[in-house]
Image (cartoon, rainbow, N blue to C red; front, side, top):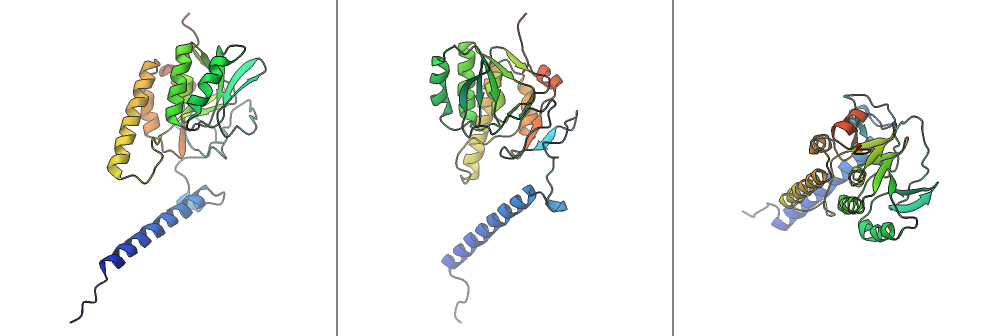
Length: 250
């Protein structure tokens, strides 16, 4: 009797096709979830970032290209740069925009060569490259540069690591500072054991950095519990509790 079972190559191609269809379906569902008219069963776990933050209700959906916090007084930052940019505005040095790969190598020389010298740096960023944030943050600490987040402005994702690098750190009353989970590799299709190893090493490096900067590493429990498409907004009392706010030693 003839063997009618599928050829091994055909089975493999079929499995690949099913996998590709599954990925496509997940991407479509993700688009629907982010759409204004999302279906009830696809709604995000957290409210929109524009919703007020209250104690115990601090996780918000987060899409850097769309979401802005509901801070009061509201400050319109305009369109943030696509890449981290150092500017001098209103007698203040500002570092703002998306943190991209290689930004540390590009910006550290700019900070060192700035005239007038950078002594206090206003930060505003939706986040980005963790590695570059850590490298810039360490350099800020080595140079004794203070960091500030202004009222109505944001510092999310990897940006709090820049902020933590400040010799002294201040956040105005309605500044919005938030943390979440991070990815540490560029290739999201690595084998599971490799991806997990990268994530664990990356988290250990972040915790070591925060400890070196004098930040209470217990803040990471909020970051690790918050998915990458959400953000956990730190309340003023939490900024104090975890020693993010450290205006002076006096």
